[in-house]
Length: 487
Image (tube, rainbow, N blue to C red):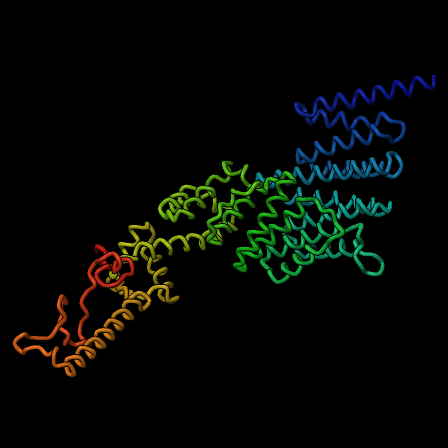
């Protein structure tokens, strides 16, 4: 008889638990009541009561019933000392914390996270730490501290984050102060959190130091997502220093790691990779590599794909059209901050190509052809003049630009022509004076070579005949090859 009653009770408990699971989707509140009824059916704390509480807490947190979730979590933690095994409790608690972190993250994506949710998460982590530090479960304590540090990062509570990360680094050291190789993974995760913090604070000096330290941690077998985070922040750091090549390398490594981890952040980092390709003025298509090729036609990055294509073909009108039609690209602050540099490069190149045949043009003419404001045309031309990439003068009063001799080549050409003419005249005079057979009659007029269209005695300091609009003259911007733009 004593054996039959516990067996029947066990069946009732099991049935109640699985009945509650069936109600989770359609009637979550009823399911919570059923799950909370499971522990009461046990004479002593056991597996079914632990499972029932665990399910009830998850539902309560998802429904925003944070106080109730915290209350029942406290009850759940009383099971870990004796009612369930150490490994099972550690795995279950870690999964529980992952779950509430995920739910809060989803709410954050939907802009629904409030301070109550963060406060509840912090209580979960604090309760977990006090419980498992007392049982000397160092591994779970480290994992929980990392989650708590991540929470501080999400809240932008940088003081708390700094203190918590320092605590984690100390826990990852041996008694002699050297790094514990067995805890390298946790140490690397702590570095990743710090790096993100300094990236957000735009403290590049500290960020660079931590980034270099993180790359030297060899004892760890990090999760690819952690490596993705570190490399992404490294890429952004290099971008701020205008070190486009290193930025491209880091973004590529970040993309590969995020892709391996199955993280959606890979799409955003791939956009950064395309951005650096344009900033590098590279002609290599970023989607030619084996890793990125599968994403070439992904609709989530089609705008960036079209943008780099227009950039590499010097199609300024297409480039401007893509930017105008895809304003969502600028929703990412990092892209918005750096795309201006790409656009300026694109517009500068377009202006130089457009004005190449002209000696005089208006700012309005350039603005209409490239479809950018007159003020920006003037800014770009001003920078080109200051950088000595264009020899011209801007008349702000009437909005015209006069192009001078291109980099002095026309002036140099004319000076050489004058020298050559002077030398020929000297030679001819000498021959005439010393050779009687070459003397000409005065009646023949000015001396000259047969077939030449100008007299030998013309003034070399005077105006030089035009070379005419021949192909060579036009190609080199000399003589008649230059035009005046329509005004």
